[in-house]
Amino acid sequence: MSAISSGTNIGRDLTVEQGIASARLVAINLLAMARAELGSLDHVARVVRLAGYVNSVPGFAEAPAVLNGASTLLIDVFGEELGTHARIALYQPDLPREPRLPRN
Image 1 (cartoon, rainbow, N blue to C red):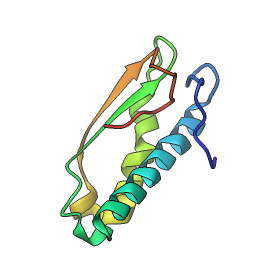
Image 2: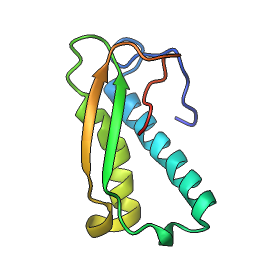
Image 3: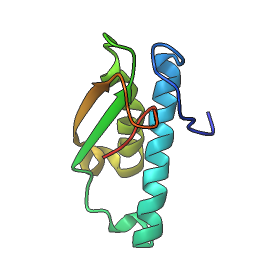
């Protein structure tokens, strides 16, 4: 998956695996923005918290699995000690402009 499209809903339009790939891509984009701002990711002291709002069908129970796409990437990039973080995965059946996985 190379782009994050809007107007899609995990559990209706996308599989959990596609949601995981989307979460990973969101994290890549966040890291790119951090690097552009800081000049280098070496300036990141540690990852503290990740919050993800997963656009999904009512009753969808896999939001934590979807957010693993972002969590795993952060640990891969920063290592266990600096990349392990607190997190919250929230289910959201309707998001403004319907993004799949907004970030906080």
